[in-house]
Image (tube, rainbow, N blue to C red):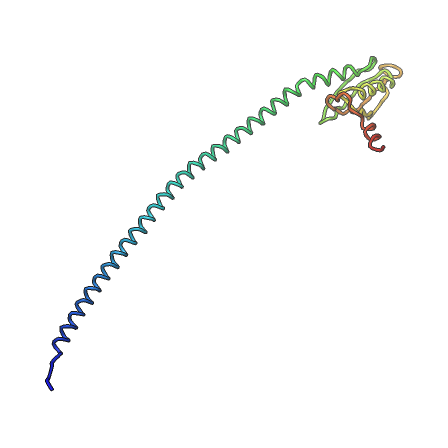
Length: 197
């Protein structure tokens, strides 16, 4: 049998495969490095793009916040102006009422009766005066009750004042201010009577 030495051929084959493996390994490492670099670049680009979008959004949010603050300031100023206008309108609307109250008080006052003082607290007026007789006080109270501007007169005190006449007396009464009663307004008694039907 012939002796064949395959050792050098195997050695060469092994070296060649080792060389190919090294080349493939280097190629794979390079490809992996390039792929990682490209992936990192893509991710960095996306992060930069998102940051730019976030900055644009933040700038728009700041503009909108400024506009919201301006709108709130305008609403506040508007409400202040409305409140001022309401106060002015109330003052203008109530200005002639004092004159009307005094005028109606004079119209309700019969002859033989004069007033010493009027004092208003809220919707109630306290009236003090002197009358020639108690009939004059009764007439005065009826006139106030029938007035469009007053209601519910209530006599709180009567004292004799003979220095003004035999039947003269000082009186104190209270009367409620109603504002002008509307035409056709029913009294509380009529409303209660209709409700009871």
